[in-house]
Image (tube, helix red, strand yellow):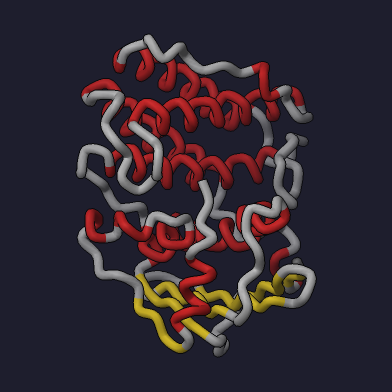
Length: 264
């Protein structure tokens, strides 16, 4: 992937305090839903997941990331385990809350520029984990709340930053893993409620990414939270947020191809 110089620091960070606060507040909501709901409740926006699986996934990510920060290097994946399936909702919620609390403490203790391994092509620093986990937690909080049909919206400014982080970090990893291929055709992305515009252009090696108002073969327009969820493959939850679907301009097949990549 090639990027313009403004992406050199992996995007316009909102700041450590905002990210860590968002992780904490979204984690509280996840724990509350977990504690008060049946773990077998399906998560409609994630095929094959139930509520218990979603909470276990996010809880594992929190604990593994915290270890990567503590070590300043990659933590062994088997160094973090999840509760046995026999553990009930209250026990799983306690486990999740403990891990989320420890993560918030770690991210607030280590300086943003401290070294920390991330499996993404981003600066290998605590700041990058703060950003990544704020968006990981917000999207999975929506997943969990969709299971009980009580989804609260993602803050628009945070969501716009999440779109930037998806395009400059997560999408690069997804395409590099071979789980998806780069679509043919360029895509312009435009947030309509807060600042945020991007152009994604296939370049033979991946894609080139710029932050600009420019014409693509297709364009998607919508509120930042709706754009973020659609890019992450959660387009089906937009109705639960009470918002309109995205506006698609130009070649709909190009827009659909980019949106079909998604991610977990």
